[in-house]
Image 1 (tube, rainbow, N blue to C red):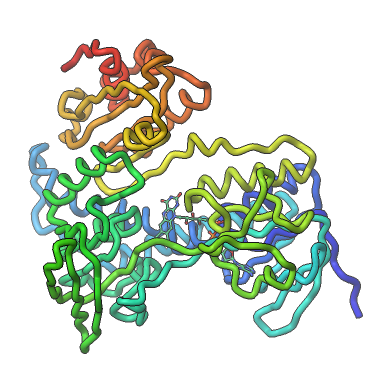
Image 2 (cartoon, rainbow, N blue to C red):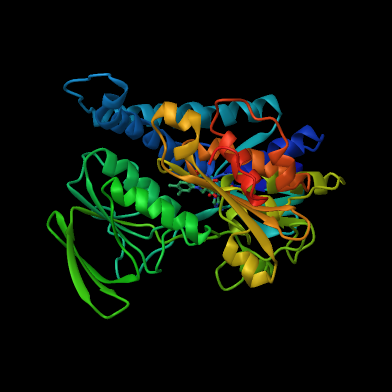
Length: 469
Ligand code: FAD
């Protein structure tokens, strides 16, 4: 019998939580391995999440821009065509490059990649089941669980993998549907809805709540709703899907609104995007007595440690927003804690972006959250319509909203609907990390003409001293 491989750290799962934890642990001098059951590294984010969705969002936006927006710049483009096959191949190439990049980073940092399904055997042992059915048990002083999440299912519209699909399948449709019904008005539903809408699909979004992007400040959600509606997406809010039936190549979806009014909608595809659930199948949690909450999230303490000493959990598998950068930051923090350092994640300052066009980016508290916490606050807003660069770009939809503490002026939240909001939100993150105020932003020199000048103007508006409106 060959001797068991032993490591300081074994990570199960190679998504943004797992691969980052493995690299950071190795950087800190710990002998590290990462177990991954799928063929490629990178998890949901790189393979079927953030990256392929953004590749399609960028491609489809280029198409929609060329078709509908170049005219105002005096650029005449005739016969704009679409080659969906090439668009999909480009997406796959982007994914391929980045997943191979993780394999390269593992090699560079001397992280051992153990392909196979990982299962906890004890607090210091993990069984790796390989694709050929053979198993190997490795020992570890510390184990990090980073097995991520999978799409949640809806009993009234069960997935059939062909016509009623999840986000993974919606990223790879082989032809442009005539009609797509999206269940769920959150980030994934709006992003995938935008992709197919731009390519010519009639998209209807059904949302149980009375608003889209329920995690965002209500005013900003309403602004995005108005813009997406003007782009041609149809929304049915306060509506629940009661049944979905596949007949041949069509899906017939029954729904009911809050007033009890019933409707029946026909679609070529239905995308169920009502959220994601933590994934821990075959991980051996129960056998080791590691508790999970009623949503299936592994319970951890402030140092990411489960009830079993030396077994940690991070990313989508634990509490907090299901976001790649949150998982990454937890990966760094847990590796540093294991190495005896003071790893830490500031959960008050985690940005959240919806990559529609324009984008919605948000960090910190919304007005509703301030009210619920009894915090008195001031707000300042500034529309992109009054921003010189947005005018020059002919991209004037949206606004910046700043929320500052009424007593101290400390920045509590920033919310942006606008072009490249995802890139702009970093300014708010930095100011909030340093405990800065709206006044700090207002007094910082912003290059002209740029989109972030709208942030400065919104900060000035908090003190009711805007210049350009
Ligand atoms: P995951 O990325 O889910 O990785 C878990 C890994 O563990 C997987 O590779 C899985 O195969 C592996 N695994 C599971 N069990 C085992 C086992 N027992 N043994 C071995 N391996 C195992 N977030 C953003 O921040 N920005 C975005 O723009 C964004 N867009 C998204 C778009 C879509 C369509 C989707 C679906 C998600 C998106 N997300 C986005 C969310 C983001 O992908 C997740 O929050 C992130 O991937 C979570 O990282 P993780 O490391 O916790 O888990």
